[in-house]
Image (cartoon, rainbow, N blue to C red):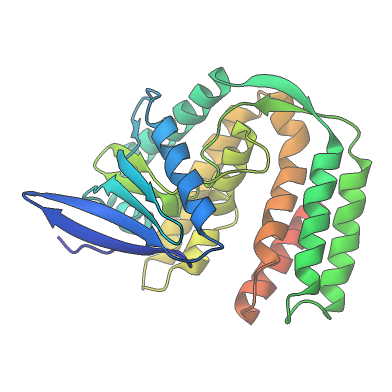
Length: 287
């Protein structure tokens, strides 16, 4: 089996054989990434203490932090990425995967409580997006982006009261952060969210199922038509299930709008910028 491991900026990932077992070592010496890597590992370790149906969390064996370096030792999982899995999975397997996603988020909901969130939290987060756009050398003088920003700001200002489930979430539940091993699904790369809500996990799932973000980032050849059909199936079923909740129907769109702005603020490549602006325009059109 070919083993492929990818790392994000600021983090090196190595596969190390110790005896008869393989382990993942994630290391960083980037001062800007140290705290983030520690928080990711601790969040993953905490999540592994919960029991989920059909989903698993790779074990974190240790987190070692020195003054200038963080090292994390993690369980290695033999698996496929979402592209490889979706290209070979049958209808029943995709349905099983959808069920697993729904059960995972429903478990998060059971561990959360409905709370009122001050809309200022959203406005402050969007303010920080604006500050990053100003220092983005590609977007700082883009008039189209400025217009979209003002339209989005008006949407956030018009929100009167935010009442959503608050408690736990993965934080970055995209297809690319799920490892597939048969009918077992392993969740990796947990991330601190500015609001710890299961709603944020629905937002991140639909970032891929509705807007195909991870497909855009994939650099190898794949069957795009098949992937689109499967993604649309996942999106329909996820949406149909969570539409039973008033908080989803009310707040999904503004939080998805915020989500894509938080991606755009760092974008530099023209193809990515064009795509993200199209998505933001499509979401604004829905209000």
